Length: 343
Image 1 (cartoon, one colour):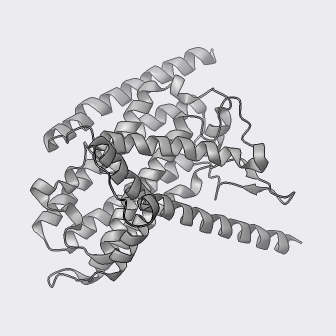
Image 2 (cartoon, helix red, strand yellow):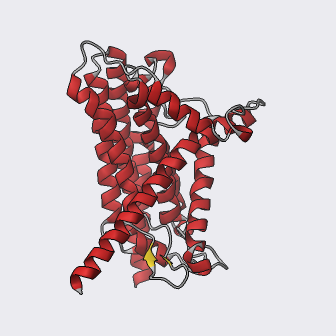
Image 3 (cartoon, helix red, strand yellow):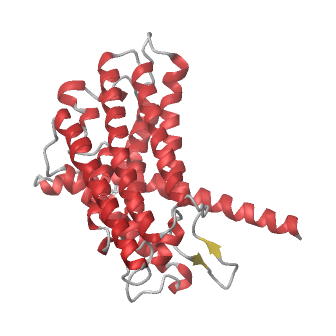
């Protein structure tokens, strides 16, 4: 009986992982289409409209292009590290979505309820921060192994930027952990039922986390790691075909996961006032969660096509001299508030 239960649980989790992987790749692919459409709307042009109706097959055309383009390798590249880097970056990006709660439980046609979370780790925040920090290695290895000075400069910039902004991001999350008393993303979502969202108690923490998420994902105005006017394509200058595709896909997956974390930690996750997450057999929770996530993805794109990029010294100054002190002040204020309310 125990063996049968274990086997059914493994099958359930394997199917959930597969579905989440497919959804993540699909969102990453169509985020490229969405970004080009958003950019076109802001620049008064049409955008992709040739591949399929309204251009909806453009991501598939781009995928075919990546797979069929010539896959070259620089003669002076460190072969195995050059091959490893994009795969490692993609792997780390995909792993971060495992602890995000997309809903409560899914029950269709009277079947067994399925938890809409791959795993509910009691250290979910630490898990995400840990895997996010590992993404630096994929970027650094890719830039260094290419044996190209522009790629190396881009990798150094990206690594310094990610390490700098991870500090402020972690400090912003500490305040949220102090407020909720848990590191579990599932528990955070449960505590924000209705309209009891953390954004009302942590507006400064949200703002810091949001800015740091832009920098972590190398999004404008923090895209100095791929500043084409100075570094050509940045750390993946020497990559082609699907190796380049892995780097680009991973960046969009990181944006998707970052927006999902924002929605979960600060905006109630799958909760929405007046709506029961268990409605429609548990489908309402994922619908609300994805709606919030897609909204923040749109905001990321809106910012990219609105604001000019920082100079690199301005970028580092903002991280170390503004966001880190503000995050520490936010921790002190949150601690004082928790202590006062606790009494």
